[in-house]
Length: 205
Image 1: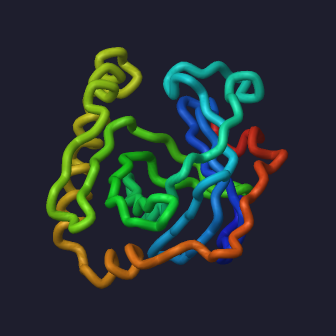
Image 2: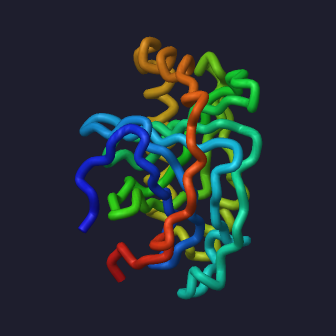
């Protein structure tokens, strides 16, 4: 049974699951978990597991995923429950604000150890002032559609959601974005460990 609610400071994992196969696992810390907003943080030294190709993974995640650690950037993931995209706020290791990033993905699904989703490959880079944007990884996205990994109908829906997400970022309340732009992780933050249950099957076949 998934946890109904996490508390600030709880350590969780964000897993990308594609066709019942775990493609990546990222350790994260809960910043906020309410009916309106889920905020997850990960930064330098946070453990993660990933496959070389998100769309080519066998059914045995224990043998497919290699261990890594997150690099020098600090990332805050902001998601409205049920939304098919996440907004990332990104800072350098000196906490210089880099800008925003819209990650198109399946709506988050709760698990006993965190959340599951799947990246849709197509993303949007957004400037710090939220006025300029550019689509990212379109070639990978188009290749996935041509290969049949993403249906034409789903691809159309993903692009439409991306357009809506851009509009929300441009027209959304500045107070919301300004507040998160000023957010910084606690100085005494603890780098979480990857839980032993990271590979458990919490999704439907």
